[in-house]
Length: 458
Image (cartoon, rainbow, N blue to C red):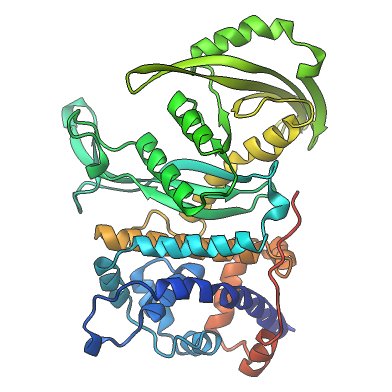
């Protein structure tokens, strides 16, 4: 029974990987190989597959990868499950290869895989008003007292008596954030010292990287309807205008101190709300009261000119009951959420836009937290070389995408519920590293026709 359970878990995970890897490897094989043809032992596909599998199995470092992948049982199982890996490369070979290639093409392979999934309508049930919800947020990846590469950003740390420079790496991430909690890595944009405004002595910043990311998203998916889910950094005119010019929807968190003119007009109009501008409902044991004001005039400065646009503001007041852990008595909790919407609010769409879309902006924060704390080692750069570091980052994001598809598949849903997402990966890695698996039965299981079916939306 133990062998059967492990074989079933491994075969289901590997079947999803083997179904999606041809798309990735076909695109990755197009990367020009800078190595001497007569000295090549491992092809581009073997190196890329080796790198992806290291992150799929959540190996912590290059040293650990060399140790684990050279173990006889794991090596033999990988050869059977992935016929491309007839020999396992040394991890330094992959690192040197990443240093010399255009690593942006690795991310292009990830985008190509997502295009394939979208064409097959795998995410169709999760759309919000016909749009793909994309959450965007920035996070720090790495910080050091030593300047390893000229692209790192710089800041001063320490108290007044001991100020010293610190060099750090910051990334703006874009993820598909669906209402059932599934978060799919989509695209990354690195902040680069060279992208700053040298004339004004300003470094690169999150907003600059956001604009670059938006242009890349539009080039990659020019006709795809998006709904951007953004935090309190982004309620500014140029961001909203950029979204509108591309035909994208948005839901942006509005903090109390942001856009004072909009807040002033809201305070003037809130007492005049009509009944059709209010909505009350019970959602997930929370009593919610929505009210909104459409068509607020917002003016801003851009390119030396005064511009204006209409914004739509929605406020959600909610309360719910919780048990106080100290007194064991029920207590009432309250919260307020405010968003700017690209489309006028109504009683018909306020639940979809706020509860099913805007509230799930946390998906990007949850996804980054998973990559930092749950086995993907987001904050470990794997190489101090700028190009190789980015290459490892892109391979990690591809591995997270593949694992997310497997963990939200109907085939593995029961096991994920029992073991947890990280527990499932640990279970599969342990199964591959010990003599649990019968190769004949595994091949028989993998020969069956399978179709990726994702769990139903919440």
